Each structure stands twice: as C-alpha cells, then as structure tokens.
Image (cartoon, rainbow over the protein chains, first blue to last red):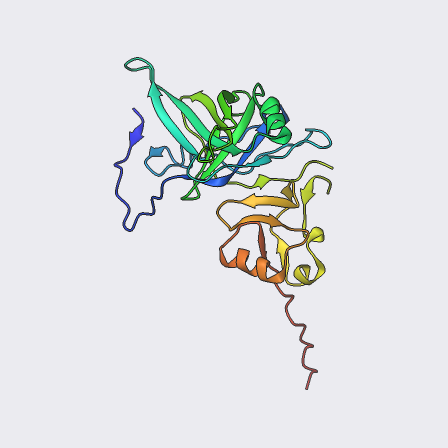
Length: 184
Length: 76
C-alpha cells in the first residue's frame, strides 16, 4: 500500500483564482526527453509525485525549433480544470485548459490554423505561480474546441475561445525554466 | 557551448560579479515562473542579477572572490 500523508491547511494561504496572461506551447515532437516526477520520497503528501523534476530538454529539435511559443490570453477568460472521469476504481484526470485569444485578424486565424491539430505540450501559469503542464513528449495534449466570433454589437468581444484537453492518471506541475529562444 | 546559456553570455558588468551555476539548456531568453518572469541572460543588468540571487534563483550566483594572496612572513 502506498504511504499517504494527511493534507494540512496552510496558514495565510495564497489562493487567488485565475491564470496569468501568457500561454506557452511547444510541439511534443521537439522534446528530446521527458522529465520524471520528483518523487524524492516514497511518502505521498508533499506534492513531489506530481512535480516534474528539472528543466525541459529540446536537444536536437532543429534550427528554429526547440522553444515554447507564447501567446496572449485575455484576463479572466482562462482557467485550468481537473475533472475525474472513469468508472469506480478506474478514474483518470481529464485536464482541460480554456483560454481566449483576442482578435480575429489574419495573425490570430493563422495561430488557430497552426494549433488546431498539433500534438503539443501546453503550459498555463496560474495566479499562484503554479505552472500546470498539459501533455508530454509521448502523450501530447490537443486543442479540443475553438469558438471564434467577430461579435455582433459593440458590447461583444472579438476573438476565439480555445480549449486544450489531456487525459492522464497523474497531473503535472512544472517548476523549471521555460525556454523562449529557438535553437540557432 | 552551443544551445546552452553559460557565464560567457552574461553582459560584462554582470559577469564581473555573477556566474551561472551550470550551463542552462536553451536561452538566453527564459521565463522563470518562480523568479520574476521573463529573463534574457544576454542583456540582464546587475540589478536584475542581484534580484535573482535575492530570490534564491538556482541558476545564477555571486562569484566567489578569490582569496586575497598573502605573502608569507620572512624568517626571523
């Protein structure tokens, strides 16, 4: 039986809702390897079984690749959800992340065209600096929904709401560097 | 070291006081989620480097100054 510790409350806990304004995405095929979970002890309770160990590696991804592409996300329109799915005793996490990209110009439409079918790794940093990682090198996440509109009235928004989806038995929290420089 | 951010890539005023703790794959631009966000190690200022060290960023540190050489006393 695995060792399970109690979950304790944190004094003066910071627990702001929402995600920050920049999203990160890299095609899963560009990763050279995938970090293991920290798992520093065999005792569950301190988070190390869901924290990835170290930094991502993009060695060999090729010139112009091997980095996280960034995109702006509209305030208060992004969130990451963890939903348990499956039958009794067979539960997995359905992790979804929704985000709103403002604008419906050629650049934003091109972004959607590029992202809509690509197997990828998506990072979402929440307001508590927890970086939620969807997808992995061999088990990528995909865009599952996209709903764009020009809006009809001046009170409407013009842009696209995307949802990224990933199924996993164990969530991933990433604490390493996010490389923003393509390989030269 | 191609594909890695090393001490050599730090600006000269920063390199005089700080060094990378180890070659960091990728860069020189990173987002460091727990250490203030976007950082470009090729254009970082001394103030930014100091702030990273204060935040206990594991990738950069103050250089250990070489021990001051002391000539031995001549025999009496």
